[in-house]
Length: 115
Image 1 (cartoon, rainbow, N blue to C red):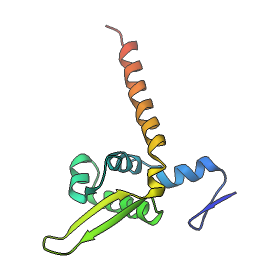
Image 2: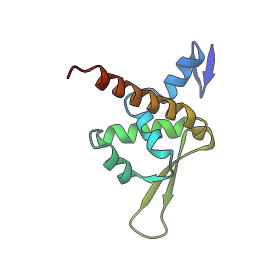
Image 3: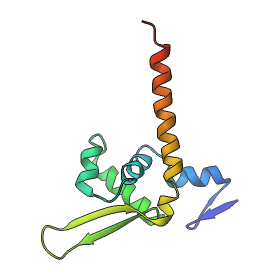
Image 4: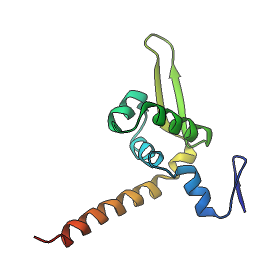
């Protein structure tokens, strides 16, 4: 049994999927690989995700210590940026492998398609 942030997981893969699994978490993390993004920048990159879903996924990733949220209040309008934490950065090779596999599958599918 593995424990992380007060939750128990039956194995290491279930822990990993518990933290980054779901439809949108890996997408958020993939976009943050290259650096910090503001909430609205993430929204534009993920137009089919609802605002509620994006907010909930960002909050969950922040609670798990995968991303950090920085609020700039020095002058209006309020600016919020999200970035990978040091723990989140350890996921970069995994995220890139997932992305590469997705590209591979798409290429395989187009090669197998009848002409």
